[in-house]
Length: 81
Image (cartoon, rainbow, N blue to C red; front, side):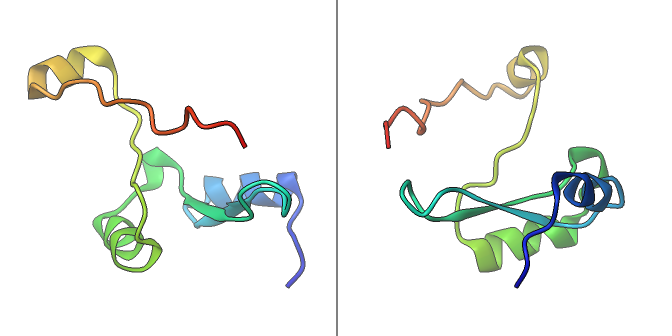
């Protein structure tokens, strides 16, 4: 499978498609599924929860976290690879 250019990935995100972002083979050698937050649908969240089996990260501002009474989580990305 060929890798897409950054421009192609941006166009896919704009149209609501998933994009898989992979890191270097010498690092974690894994991929993350991303989708634009403004394009997200319940089916996409379900797909990520069912098939990707990782964390689902969502951007949210502090005021909304307070309203929902959600405390800040500990950063899981403090490891150095």
